[in-house]
Image (tube, rainbow, N blue to C red; front, top):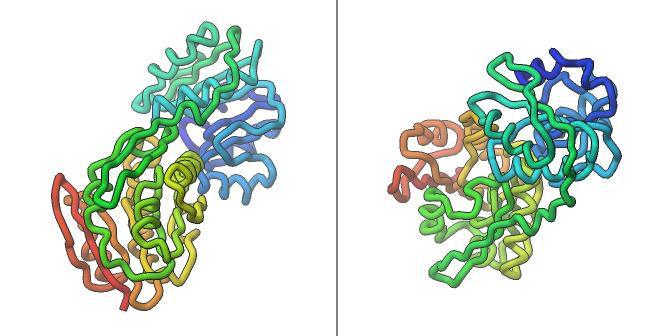
Length: 332
């Protein structure tokens, strides 16, 4: 059981009612709270909830339309995303209870202050290195417009400007990260065919690839609903069309790919987590056609070449700089 869920269950009497668990972890909490429902923007957590508690969890960037009498927000990493989620929940809860639970290292005390616009926050519990806070919503806000919270910026690239649209909570929100910047310089000579942008984030790589390889089919994949929505907005802003899907890791990707291009994710909540990237390296061969290529950027200190060579084939370092390396490998 996730420690945040354990803290909630220490106060279980508060949640024996129709309560929405926003950002709930993939554990047994829905089983312990039979009147609760879930809302998640993580495709893996949604798949876990669907398999164990069918019909009790909603996936997307906005709360479910069905009514709920209280809500608990499991604190996300991003402060901007927290602001949006609290406003989206508080707008639906005038005169009712809104809770936030999170790890101390994840900024729960900061998040408690973010409750203040809606009422008087109070701490209910402090255990398992986590805290639980509650507010009765006395000042309910208008329902927030997610699109108005997007950050937009323009990249001046060799083949023309690219407009990027980034929603709260998306990796490198509102700016181009250094790893992607390096990878953008090394996208030449990819095999033609079906190309996958794995871990697409705000859609920078996918949009550039579609523009440079217009005759290739492009699929953008991310585990996060806010990232997928951002990618769609970025494509639209540049007059481009491509498929955008949400899935848990490379297992949810199409097969017979000509190329996989990725600045792979390495965070899960407040923790560093390399599982999705390592699964990508192990499973890429199953999704690439013979002669298909994987090209990715990674931190220089990560020893990925031996893993790539074991599972895919000879690994070439195309470039190194600013703490990152670009790797290329082809399926034999």
